[in-house]
Image 1 (cartoon, one colour):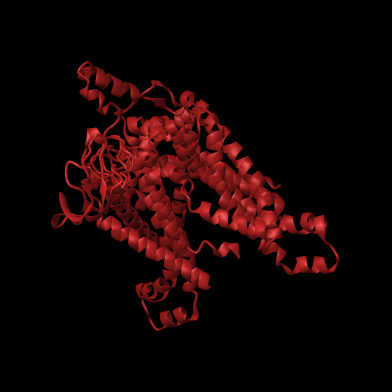
Image 2 (cartoon, chains in turn yellow, green):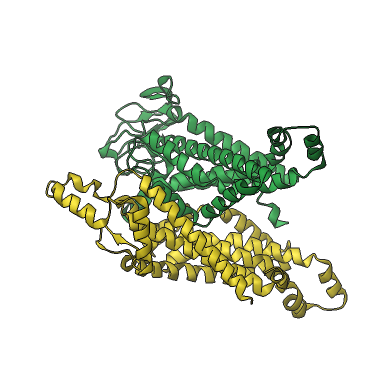
Length: 302
Length: 327
């Protein structure tokens, strides 16, 4: 693998993250009201105290000053200070991020583990009973929004007495169910695409069949479009996990983020935003590297 | 092909029914959606009966309330609470109802004793209007930026495409919430709805812009475009007459995709408490009580708004051509 390709991609990712942080700073700067807006109503806090707090948190500074200060805090790994908790954002963020990663990685692994054989099997027995079943199930599930899916699963779980707060089984179930239909469909169509190619017919006519045809000729070619799908599935999972965590009570980034928005806790809003973007970019990059490893054609122009 | 047409017809007719029902919320719903009644909190759907406790059959269906022996016959076209047609002329006529003090809750009541059917219908007005408005905004923004980027190229293209990349590099929901965070938390209901539509439209432009740019890139290379340019046609003429019509197909499929996605975005925001709040009602705020374990443990009918949202999403998915991948 060429180092230049990797370096270029990493630089691009860095550029994107810088752009996102700048955009969020500008947007949040425009926001009316800040964390101390409500503190003003508190009679126990005098104007001097408020002014001192403002000074301490650097709320009086101009946007570029704030941004530079924040960049400094990124460099020392603290990501700014949470007003509500009076703690560095990083100490709040990392435990939550670990929880979210546990959830999304488990779901990512499980959903691909199920989607790959199911899609291949469905394509292999095209228009058979399994294929028809899979198609019906996926087209019913694919239109189902994550939010509602999570609500329905919670409803069933509570009714059946399965619900336990802090249990990973339910959120993972929802995330896998949310990701699965699209994945299975894409795997199926990728395999079908390849199996219609002339070289597969040629291989068949040469008497190559069974496992050799599948593993040597069919699947490697079909893996190609799936590598880029991998990055997209990461993006989908991160978005859905925010809702799923909130609804099913999983202490990940999602609930923290919502809480921070409601409290106008500026840096605690920026933290999860940057982290989610970093996850997404990492997912896409991983997908591209996978593609790079799988497909010799794209190595030419790098 | 025939099956595709059938799906499309099914989708479009269900959607028309849905929108008409939601527009006529005041007429179809028997009560005011904000009408609280602590005495009837969390009541299951009212049973419509033909046979009374004495085993006597009545031709006109009736309802009874617990602890009240009287029969309340179901009446059609009755006078009830006052409402306005789309904010315009006011009226008191409802499609059905029962005489006071009887109450009819076809889909049960929430924890404040408000009629769920009326709330679902009224909530649809906010959710659907927000979704459509946001989609209109995102599509027009995406279309104009995509046209400019694709046609002129150069720095304009670089600017638009880098911007789109920035917006697509964030997980959609995080982006939505982050942009929502810069608006005041509590506004009047319709201002909130409008603001949310603006937010969603503002962040949703990137994908249509990219697609439109792709179409325009190939459209502007056509021979007749060169010919037209040779005859001295201006850039704006070329964009309007030759590039714009080529984008209609992309725009239509994007609309079928974005409208339900944006309706859902509003539902999500209201669900997490960053959207439309009391006294206004949206499908999102109707779903919010589901998060309370005690409520869904005892009251199954509170899940019904979720089915309505599923149905809406499903209708829209019939319009989008998502079956093509099944080959």
